[in-house]
Length: 115
Ligand code: DGP
Image (cartoon, rainbow, N blue to C red; front, side, top):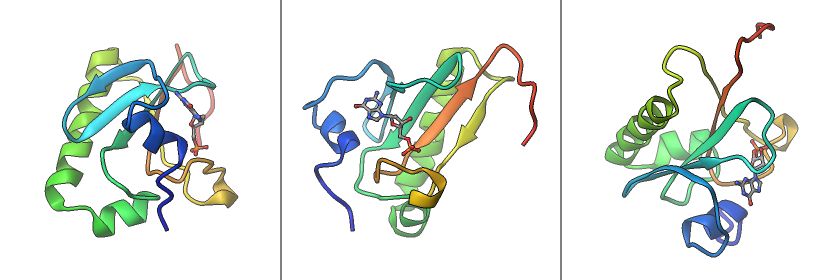
């Protein structure tokens, strides 16, 4: 069940400020408030989806395509084309703390650990 008062919904409504990286009609990308990498940006769809499966099962195909296009544009805007990771924490067990679907884009000078 999507909670309209989650923090990313408030960011989308402009009730909480964010440091924007990329924005269009379908997507918003902004810096994570608690970065865990040299570059740490979140990309969210402009729609009410709690997690990756809610998004992939219930969002219109056009929005899904636009979302991944927005991820690519964000990465290119950040200049990270050949050095970034994406993470989608899913569920409380994996540490998902905001129940609005989001992708973490993270980059360091050089990743030293594989996972
Ligand atoms: P996750 O743990 O996967 O749900 O990631 C949620 C991320 O959102 C976490 O890294 C911290 C970030 N975050 C939480 N509140 C805010 C906020 O108000 N502004 C910004 N920019 N990021 C936030």
